[in-house]
Image (cartoon, rainbow, N blue to C red; front, side, top):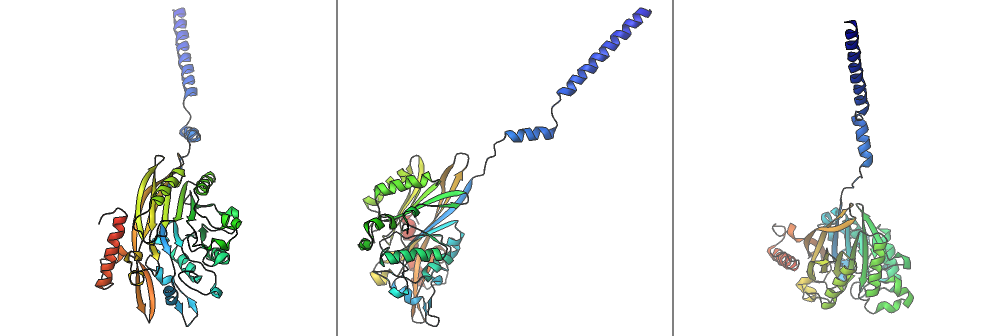
Length: 392
């Protein structure tokens, strides 16, 4: 009995020891506590940056003819004020992340005499008003770039800088012709070219002309697009002065060059010069959507039915484009396009001509203006939206 009892005690002890040892192994094999697991998981996760978006707004030809200059002059102070011209569109321009327009004049100084067509020279307050409206970039490559010669070109660039804006298309130094703006973490490259300068190219030497004014040349355009993309542009905008004045449709050269530029890497083309609105379109290039508007029309001018017998020169359109960058693949795409038709209203106050750019949709269903003016606005709105492919 004693031996049997001892055997039972031995085996019982052995079983308990085995259970205890097994339990110890299991305790050692338990997973780390939740904090350790989270830290380990975090170290393996690659942080994904959320997509970035930006809005880009473009307006067409900004011109200051002699009646506009007279209308902005204050005899009591001896100064000019053009801010009233832009008061109704300011909310649209100011709300965009990046706003551009074609500045089709010069600011060569009062000593040269302020004047309109054919050799434009505007008060610097014209640029002050554009800054006040919310514009960021002015395209200065157009056929009036050299209206006041080399000195006028240089002073215009200086005035733009004075009011804390930037310009593209004309330059003081050779290395300045690539502009990339970082907007909401999206690097936006901006280029600008013109078909010519009304025969005033002779005011520059051949060497100066090569870098001071971007004249349309396919090889140069192609190389500049490659350069701006090499420097990191996620998206490329082209502001180009081309086409035929007062023609409602783009010519073959515009269509052909527009297609080529998108194939070379341009994402958005803003056209100017015809002084009337031409069509816009989304085209597929290299498997991506690209946007072209062949002419934005006149944003501000004295060109109108009573001065040149052309009602369409009173029409303009602001194009507001939303773009989006996906940081997972570094692709930036056009997400949305919005059209804001404008019409230049002219009236007489205290014997002086006054001008205001009206965002038409804000006024056509109101009683702010008389019936004649409302009819003109409605006609303008219909024409513009039809050109944009938005049937009314």
